[in-house]
Image (cartoon, rainbow, N blue to C red; front, side, top):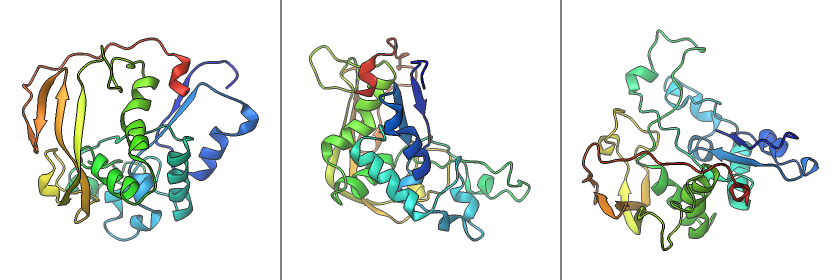
Length: 233
């Protein structure tokens, strides 16, 4: 903490870890923190029973008090961003009886659902503002990882990278709608609003109304700038 080296904490899941990382006694630090959907919507109760391995992550799910702490940190800015840690295991892979506790496969497929779940549980329920939604899903990561101001902002001179969602569009989640390799989702049956309807990359439409329209191989590496103090502002 006292070297001045920038740090990024991934997959924060507990109130104790959040309190330790943001301890006022440490003073301002070049530190950013990320959590992921598992730790906002599921408690350790989901680990009970034969389907428990479907919800295994690293770190594991926590009690309800920790879930509320993650929301609190996301709301007040102690947690900077939300990431997926997308892991498209199949149901059979997650429930493989040959795996012991040290070899269980962590993570879930959530790339398709991360924004509508956060919009539904966060914005629609009044926990976060639309502006905060944009910060934790775009701007904060662009700043932390040296992609700002080319990305993470709508401004003259920035790349034309935009995702548009419909805050009124409602759809019931089904694993059949997930284009990844996974054949299950922890959000099965959830009625969600705020679905992406259009994605523009460098001014080109690459996703529209549920269909990928971008051409394979048309992506480019994203060049990063050196770390800047703006990452924690």
